[in-house]
Amino acid sequence: MTLNIEMEYETPLEFDWEDIARKVTEAALDYEHCPYETEINLVLTGNEEIQRTNREFRDIDRITDVLSFPMLDFDAPGDFSHAEEDDSCFHPDTGELLLGDIMICIPRMQEQAQSYGHGQIREFAFLIAHSMLHLMGYDHMTPEEAAVMEKKQAEILENLGITR
Image 1 (cartoon, rainbow, N blue to C red):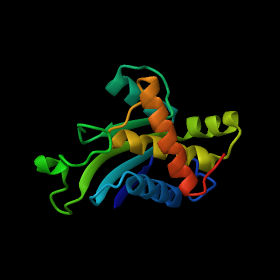
Image 2: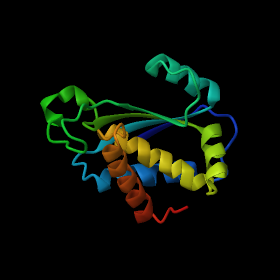
Image 3: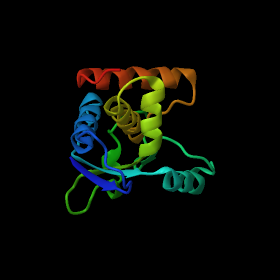
Image 4: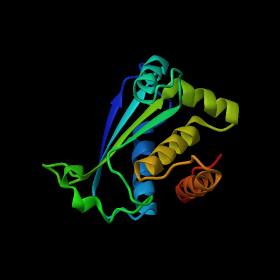
C-alpha cells in the first residue's frame, strides 16, 4: 500500500499521526478484504482549505471534518470484483489500485475530539476509518447504510485497540 500524505496544516500534531494513518488505512483494507495493493492520498488541512474544497466539490459552503473522493465506482460496497474491467483504476507504474483521496480538517478533528470526550488519536483514526469506507463504496444516506458503516468503523478501530 502506498499512502501519500500531504500536511498542509501548520501546527504539528502531538501524536504519531503518520503511523496511525497507515495502521488504520491498512486495517480498513484488510477488514474489507481488498485483493489489491492500493494507493491512497491523505491531505491534512485547515478550516479555510476544507471549506473551499467542500464548496467547490459539494456546493456546501461550510467547514467539515473529512472529505472523501473515491476513484472507483462500486456496484456494491466493498465489492472489488469489477475493478479490473477498467484498468484506468490502476497506477500505470506500480499497478496499485487508485482508491482515492481523503482530506481531514485538523482543527475540526481536534474540536470534535474534545467535544466527544475522547482523545485526538481516536478521532483522527475514526475519520480515516470512516473515509476509507467511503473510498470502498460505503455511504450513510439511509439509516440502514449508516448502521452498516457505524458497525464497520467500530470493528476496524476495536481491532486496532483504538477506543473512546
